Image (cartoon, rainbow, N blue to C red; front, side, top):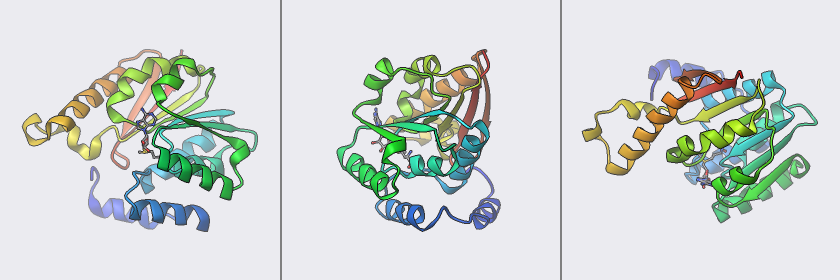
Length: 214
Ligand SMILES: C[S@@+](CC[C@H](N)C(=O)[O-])C[C@H]1O[C@@H](n2cnc3c(N)ncnc32)[C@H](O)[C@@H]1O
């Protein structure tokens, strides 16, 4: 928890849900410990999509399709989402959810490792939601930037790891230490890149909003 617990609870109490179908997917995912977007970050995601009015969205990390379907609620009718997932059971669940939601036509699910697709995908994607292997964000950033037009928005989730990225290196497991180090590098790469305007927000377990300005 990055923000005060009471403030976080209060903000959550304002949440009116996302309709019975998505609320059910969310409940099932949380029960089955599928790592889906947090409530506070969901609202940020939908708000940014609504503000940006993208034509093409790229999502890295589909899981069971929850965040893709959230974006469908906020994006323009003629917008298309391309989303990437490599874990077969989640791919099957996401396909089923897209079908049940009647959104198969607006979502393309690419099955396999994101890095392979990022090398070959053709842009432009005017909104990118980065939500997969946290340690890889730093490696994927140059490819993502090539796929975005000027004015494009990149939302990167989990960037503060619940605040753990500023923990002493002795207080965290070796694997986490590597992820935290890479995440700090990623945040430096975002904030130090003069093609980007970035704001790092203590929302959920940390979110970075970047706009490509040149
Ligand atoms: C945090 S979850 C995505 C949650 C989803 N965006 C949501 O909020 O509903 C991250 C997902 O990325 C997938 N993933 C991790 N590394 C990946 C990679 N290299 N290529 C494709 N998918 C990957 C994982 O299998 C996992 O399902």
